[in-house]
Image (spheres, rainbow, N blue to C red):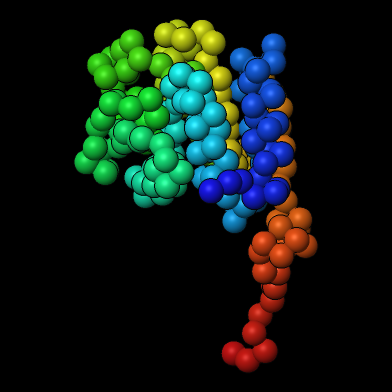
Length: 200
């Protein structure tokens, strides 16, 4: 299995960013719904783990954790799941897929001295970076204290908080964009039609 032609540049941009001097600054990929953010996350994780590193992928709900982890397993990665809603709390493997609520409650126990080399956050627009006590920011602060070289990659199809761009003091840059228009134009998605039906 390999990345699609439009996913590969996003993967390459992420790897190049995190290898650079600017790599400690959080950055995100803006990828439309249907673009395969799950695949991009899995291949980034594979890159890190194949070089002896550790990776954590966070999502808000267990169903997404299972979906993301399942794809990672399909490309040959060994995955531990850390999510109460899935009834799993394992730190056996170097790739952990979890929900932020379950992980944040284990920072003083299972993750007291454990930290990933890269933290990948699905639906990155949901990170409340203005509140240091938010779950995501507590997780990031803890992992940075354990591993000062921590890299943070966000994935989102909505790169805004309200009407403001995500780019700012926390998310420093958008590494790559995959638009709905380009996916439709290249035949990966069917065109979207808006409007009311002609009858009641």
